[in-house]
Image 1 (cartoon, helix red, strand yellow):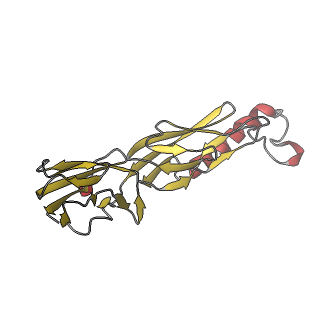
Image 2 (cartoon, helix red, strand yellow; image 1 turned 180 degrees about the horizontal axis):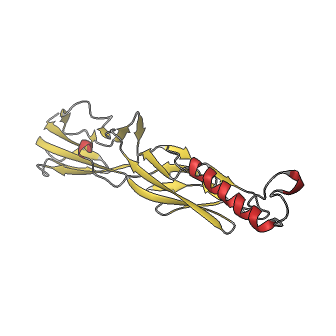
Image 3 (spheres, one colour; image 1 turned 180 degrees about the vertical axis):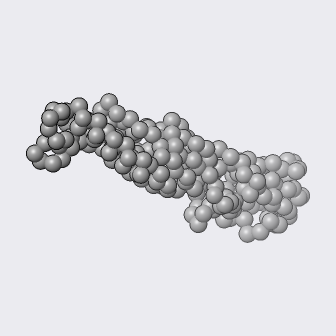
Length: 214
């Protein structure tokens, strides 16, 4: 995450403090009164991160600075929940590639943070745990499980959908990710995965299936 607003916030707070002191003080008195301290703003709200870059599936937490006010509650909203989700504590999750604006409101105040989600050099890969290799020979009475998962950035994800295209549909059919032979013969099965709304090229593979008589 990137923090680009802290220095700006400090400067703005200092200026605001001077303005409040100038309004409150008698021209004949020293700003800040006998205590030696200037008048401080009674309310402020600042999201420390102005912009954030995240890797797909990454999680994080926004830093919010604010002056407490009785009866007020921090509220977090995302302009696009399908890209970035945020909960009531400012925890964010990168759901899919894209950009979303997180808005934080507190009483009558609000501030925003723009979040950009990308792959950042990582590639999602398809995994078919029940397919030992790209060339498979099975008996005409058996089945082949073509269900799979996605390996991305060191973790596996099951929220992937697959479509299956057979070069010879007369040899068998795929239902719920399971190939069932209809006759002896050979067919290529192209497996195409769609993950987080994108059909990445790396989520496509071809399985050559040879159905033999038992």
